[in-house]
Image (cartoon, rainbow, N blue to C red; front, side):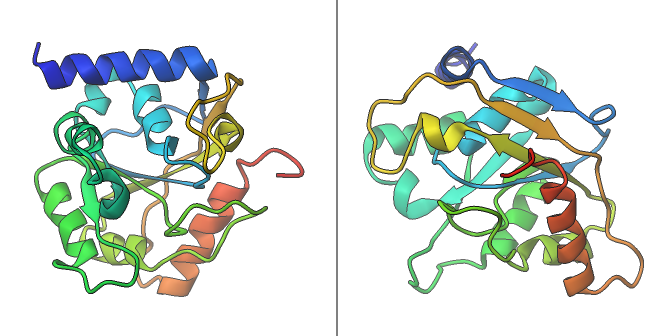
Length: 206
């Protein structure tokens, strides 16, 4: 097994030990390529989803993450690029070197699945921010894709903004039923439906 695979396995074990994560699925995981979309409170969100996937699915799933954070320093860069094979997107208002959705489409064209956060940034408030249009563009380009909502509960308290040492707390992951783009569905209708599917997984009062 390669060093990157061993590092990934170690990170999965650490994440599970720290959070006691309990993934629940509504129905069986869908066959075929997926785009897992989730609420976003922490830089560790994608790691928790990645760790919760069955091993065979994990190997073909890549997170979409901010290049400004994950390319800062040799360790983060190695983890993001070699362990997770992340699709790194430039942010902070700078002109992107490549179309972000185009980079996601390239990863999908290789047969991989993706983890995305459609709010586009960490949301430290209640509820969900408006969704960006990228998911709709992916759905239009590849209508066979399954879009799987994932609600992450409590990770924002494990790794609050600005903290260095995580706080051990129980986390839950709720995987909802997969949805697909309907024929002729508009961007607004698709994104509203995706947002409703994700919100439906949130515990009362979240």
